[in-house]
Image 1 (spheres, rainbow, N blue to C red):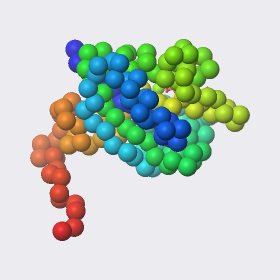
Image 2 (image 1 turned 180 degrees about the vertical axis):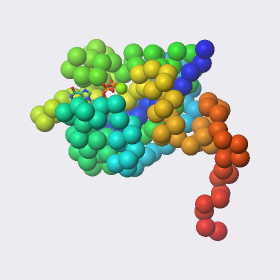
Image 3 (image 1 turned 30 degrees about the horizontal axis):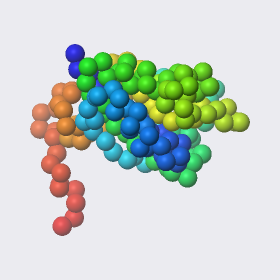
Image 4 (image 1 turned 90 degrees about the vertical axis):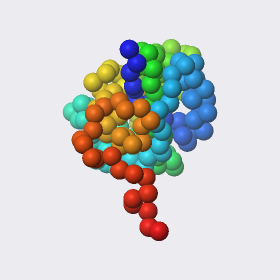
Length: 167
Ligand code: IDP
Ligand code: MG
């Protein structure tokens, strides 16, 4: 069955000019990109995204990291990949959470590092399972930004593109 997964190129990936390399690696999966945007990450979005890790000792650093506070690039590239086994395919290519333990040819193994402060700068995020993927995609994207109707929406809630722009 086709499924969707959220991929983020984290601020270290953007600062290191790795966007092209990461997209090329991800294209090995033959999955489709069905949504993409560059996001300035608010504290609220960062905390919601990582809400399961609130109690971890590294949580505050993690929020600063994903918001780009350790890098000049205060932005993240968010994408939705879609296709058969998308979640596991992207996780496998991403590699282990700890970049020093990640397979050397995985994306995190190739490009990640642990800073002297102990932050895992592991270059990308990839949803871990279906429930997480749905929760995360709904956090980072509006329905009209995704070209496949993944999840049901409230009736009449779809907006047209030009509504908010001044003429
Ligand atoms: P995942 O990104 O591989 O799904 P999670 O356990 O969900 O891993 O953790 C989210 C993010 O928090 C990681 O990608 C990494 O940036 C950071 N992180 C996880 N564990 C540690 C740790 O032990 N020390 C420092 N940072 C960590
Ligand atoms: Mg996770």
